[in-house]
Image 1 (cartoon, rainbow, N blue to C red):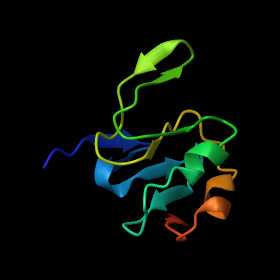
Image 2 (image 1 turned 45 degrees about the horizontal axis):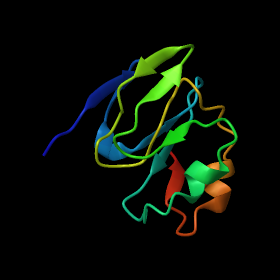
Image 3 (image 1 turned 30 degrees about the vertical axis):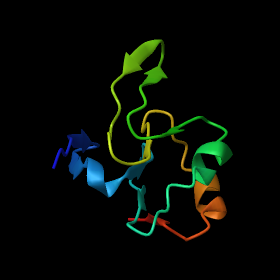
Image 4 (image 1 turned 90 degrees about the horizontal axis):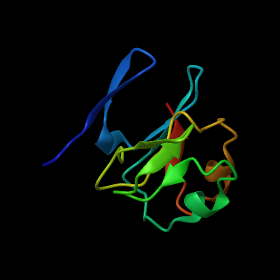
Amino acid sequence: MNCKIQKINGKIFDSFQRLFFNKGEIIMVITDECINCSACIDECEYNAIYNAGEEYTVNGETKAPLSEEHTFIAPELCTNCKSCVEVCAVDAIVES
């Protein structure tokens, strides 16, 4: 199993936690109930949510995907607006 480890705000997470992170202390997590419907991706007006394996760009710098297996968020782009939570059909995005 290929798992990418990531340190954010002093905390260590693996890619299977499917992070949703704000520069504060609240972390949004997509649980195993996720059906990968992309509703959260389509809803995010900050373009902070990406499909598995997608590169993303922050301040002109291309970054490697945070997950090759699951939808993920670019923590640098997330504003913690929670619009993704509102559109999740299976309530798979929760605060942690």
